[in-house]
Image 1 (cartoon, rainbow, N blue to C red):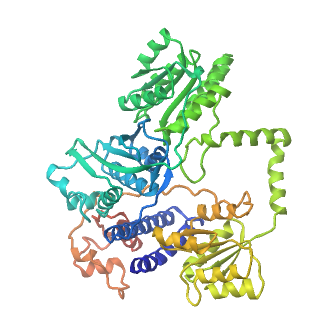
Image 2 (cartoon, rainbow, N blue to C red):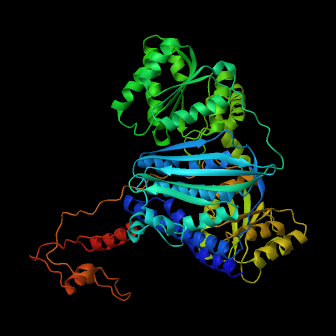
Image 3 (cartoon, rainbow, N blue to C red):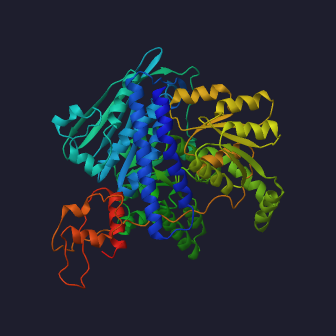
Length: 639
């Protein structure tokens, strides 16, 4: 009870900060304002993550954390964790290799979310402590019995490594290799402690092997039950996509891709680079070629031989697939499009069409996506790509392609391109307003939720507690398409208000919103009879999903335009100098002090050589948020 209460009390004001800050980011801001708002978001997200970690650790150590037992796909779970860090890895120039052994059963029984949490923690650490090179995730079936599977997952990196003497304390709470590690890389030192205890809850063990400057390999095992409804899926590639050639400089990637394809029944050969591939293609008939580009590929000089090979061999292979880092897909697509245009300008129609059918996919590619891509290429000759709006940029959503194809076909036969916008506009104008009742006692959360819903086209009524909501719906007879009730409110809480609405036989979906992150608490709310349970903060994507689920037709103008990225943090010059330096000038000022910074510096003994000189300050501070705050205050006063 103490944990549940503290979770709500700490998260409620923090969720208000996050929600209001998100609204602020969606308003017109100049570059400086956007940078400051971004720093606020980073700090608030870090605090929320720390609170979640502390609550997780406390629940585990007090024996209050209970695992869920549901059937799930281990492969998708590990790949979901990889997708969460792939952009951060690409930005740092780190190659991520996914090596999920095909012997892993498609369906097992256990706690999917806790398994993903452990994998994601190890991956995040690997990316954090690796400056260049690669991170490899390997998952395999270690053993099995008549009722259980033993899964082994390892995360290997080429990062800074860990001294032998420090490895024994890695899994202690609030502990890192040394204090400088915490200052340089951040983090609370809770992630590994929580992960180890979660693994032990799943009857497994966790360990590490590492050498300084040689990288680290963290591994763990978990015992999972066999699925109650075993998946009988057998992946078999169509015969016309074979023989296949995998071209990858990284040997781990090469072996992993070849292994997948061979398991799916393909005849596969491999080459380390374009020269080997060119020789192989001249001597062997090949239906499909898969090129995996290894980081860094940003230098066009490095790409030239690969593109030359593609130009020379475009007609020798029926299907081409290029795998590349997610944030480099656009450039590769542009190069392939340029190649197709060059062929077309020369009258080489078949080569131009072959170039247009080259598939560019993000790496590491998910097993299911690659299999679906090859299957579609075999049946249709092309692969349609889909992009998830708010999730993984550039991920190929192969499972949705049939619906997309049907929609495109029917659209083509019934509407001319110019008629589509007017048809959508007419549909929007005819739709009645979608009304939402929000019961929330926090003024900050009220404003955040209301404005987010209104931006999505909903008509919103806000009340401060459950009694007001009941009065509107039952006493006054007001009707709403949807209601959002905060669980903990004064006078009448969300649970009691929902039950009164239900007892009056009013047909209205009621969603519980709570600051609690405890699984048992969320399950209890679901069991109370809410239509849905969601946790704060309610971001725009969550609100959008809720509105769509309960029947709101989003207008084409509902989604906010994408905001420009935050500008790069300006550096503070280290070439400037001080006549004298006083530590007191950087002490926290008294709340009552309103003196400008220049006056404070003068009182602290920092002087100017000449009357017309400006104060010049060298600021040494590792926390980015503190850097910006102090820098802005000093610059405001002309320093």
